[in-house]
Length: 345
Figure 1 (spheres, helix red, strand yellow):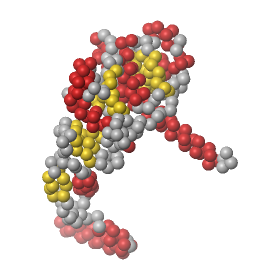
Figure 2 (cartoon, rainbow, N blue to C red; figure 1 turned 30 degrees about the vertical axis):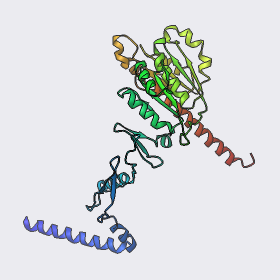
Figure 3 (cartoon, rainbow, N blue to C red; figure 1 turned 90 degrees about the vertical axis):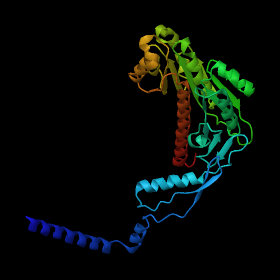
Figure 4 (cartoon, one colour; figure 1 turned 120 degrees about the vertical axis):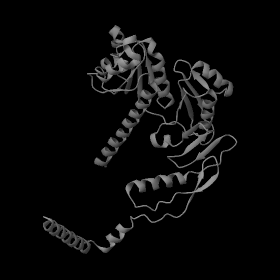
């Protein structure tokens, strides 16, 4: 048995050497040379600057074997090395620029995504809960030089009063719980106008805070034709039917509802445009803080219903804006294809 095993091993080794020789003979020399360049030679020493500290330190050397994981780490290291820093000015801001990936550090508590508008078409927006009034104001002030409109969501009246004492120019919508301030400076990029109409519907009056958040957000993001239609829930279906022609004029419909969450399904069965359903936390115990209407919306038998998180009027509005922009892009492609097919048009 041992002799047989040794013979088999020798045969396998011989076959492998023959195959290697044959492949080496067939592969051009240029390809072999290119292949050998994938091995990781020691990297030249580089320095990176610690943001906000002004401390130069050598970049790590990667002389290990060139696996995909190590190549990924090297790329991340190169990206970190490309960040620049002003060392933390007296205003507490530290900037690093690169068209789609620039950041702005505010104090030691925030890193603002200045490249979000270039990547997604939608600017950085401040989430209010969990931040102090001073932090929110400093973040909004930092964004004013770079955005034509700066907004913060979920701001309570008490927080707004403290913010206004620090920055009197901040405006407040108490129903939507949104603060806004206009941009200043040459670098404050204007929000592009978005063609189309967004209709925001509510099942009941108690849903108005979430609906107003969606409507205000859509307008600030460039949708001038944003309509708010309230209190047309299914408990009195005639209220919805009385407004159905107006609703059908919209290009995207946002439906905000609590309780049983039935309104989005009914609306989706009446219109030929996308419906974005927003469950709210309005309801009795079994509504489970909005979970019950959300599950009802997810189980809608009507087609074309998209569901966002509980009370997320902001997210629904942002989705509607992207839908309208996507529709405009498709329209442009159709027009371009028509011109190409008819050169005399």
